[in-house]
Image 1 (cartoon, rainbow, N blue to C red):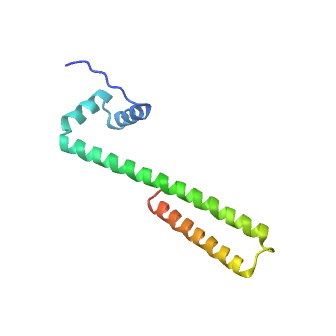
Image 2: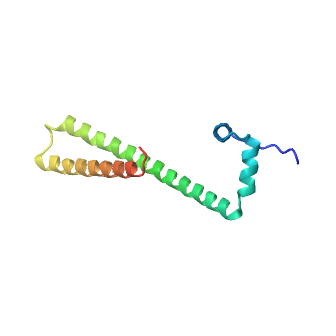
Length: 120
């Protein structure tokens, strides 16, 4: 048997410690068993799954950024309407109300999509 050292992040080390406590096995034994039962196909599936999760996370971050921008724009329109409500013609108010409603629907749809993906 050869003495080999493996570097783990704090999170990985904590996960290994939890598994060790739960299974009643040493960290070394867990790693040995994983290596004994790992194959190229399984590792490729894990790698593909990780890449898909990274892509989903990046997409959710982009959607969250869009939601933040839409919300900011919605607040600006609301502020403008409140500030200038006596200065606007009926047609201008209708146009701004239409813009406001479009923003509001976009925000609601984006929030619904984000929540539908199990994230806020």
